[in-house]
Amino acid sequence: MSPLRLRLDAASCTGHGICALVCPERVALDEWGFPDVDPEPLDTRAELRHARFAVAACPEGALSLEEGPSPDPAGRGEGR
Image 1 (cartoon, rainbow, N blue to C red):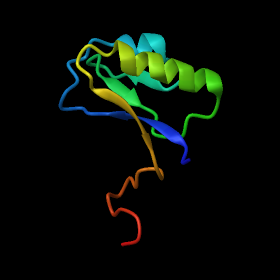
Image 2 (image 1 turned 90 degrees about the horizontal axis):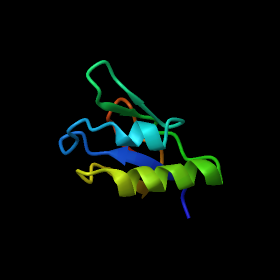
Image 3 (image 1 turned 120 degrees about the horizontal axis):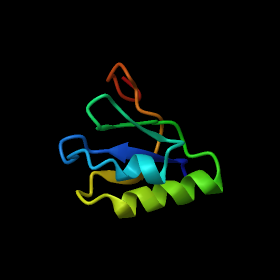
Image 4 (image 1 turned 90 degrees about the vertical axis):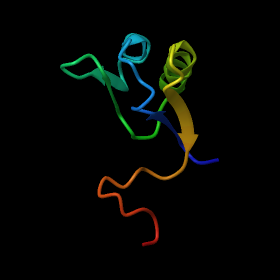
């Protein structure tokens, strides 16, 4: 099983900020109150538990947990 990461669907997010309250070690709010999600793998059981709570608490369903490699910040993708 690949490491799990939090993923944000920014188009669905309306900036309630609940995710940052529930999972502050992985989610910070920007100056407009929208989440900035740390894309690194969840390291501990506590982080995973908090991330699951954040996903469940999001009223817009904009957060999810996903498996797989770290996202490529340059947008090139794996193997290209």
